[in-house]
Amino acid sequence: MRKMFRISQKGFTFLELIAVLIVLGIMTAVAVSRATNHDAEVITGADTLKAHIRYAQTMAMNSNPNAGDETIWGISCSGSSYWLFRGTAPGDDIIRLPDDEKYINGDRTINLTQKKISVTGFTVFFDNRGIPYYPLGTQWPGTAITVAPASGSGTNVTKYYAFYRICAMKNNRGFTLIEVIITVTLIAIAAAMFVAYMGTSLTQSPVSSGMVAKQYALIQEMELITSQYRQEINNGTLNLNNFKASYVDINSYVDAANTIFTTLNSGSGTYTTQQVLVVTLKNEDQTVMSIFTQ
Image 1 (cartoon, rainbow, N blue to C red):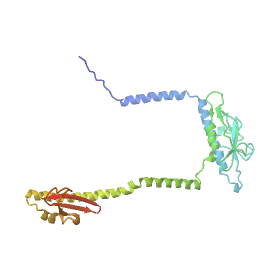
Image 2 (image 1 turned 135 degrees about the horizontal axis):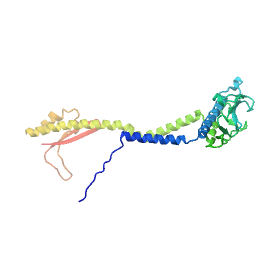
Image 3 (image 1 turned 60 degrees about the vertical axis):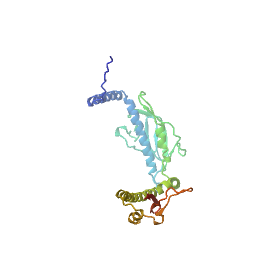
Image 4 (image 1 turned 120 degrees about the vertical axis):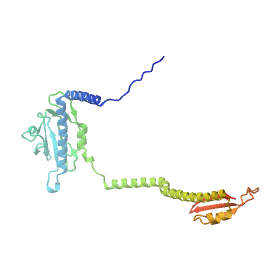
């Protein structure tokens, strides 16, 4: 004899879910705590440098040559410090960058030793269109810039991609009028093709709905006439001539020209020798026909 055992299957309780989340939180905290301070300093320093480069580009783009403003701004780095400058000579007109006071040297440069990072040396100029150059007059090639821990241990961050994207902001522009016109034209052509393809379904759907409504009205009227026909049969008082005059001819949908007495026949002979009443109801382009016999 085989015994069957049912295994209980249930979901997690609320307390179990909380316990799992707590354990995951502890594991995450341990993993984060193992990340060195050098890594955090490098990432923070790289992001700050990126923001300062954008700041230099913004200052150049906001300059007004018609008002006599200096249109060339840039960032230069010696490896142990970097600074914002204005003009064609990186060391002549140094402007203080927005940063924590403890990182600012007396000559208004950023002290990388205080930030506990080192940066590969570079210089980049921006004109009033935001285009990067180095040397001045030659467009910036997108050279890699590496931010590393000053202690020599930890994770280096190479800001090639991010920095190149910063310096390539000249490509981040709006659409020209011609591009907008071309786009609108293409959208219009696509819309016209869609309407041409779907036009029959879209334009004829109300027509189909109207046809169904007309047909339904005719069927209702024919059912009323049929109901009177059956009543006359049940009462034993059916006379097709009287039936036609009393119930068919007065109907507002009756097609008088095609509501007639006739005999059904084929090419070789008649199906019946008795006359039948052909009733035709018409509602514009919709028609319903029934045959009534004595």
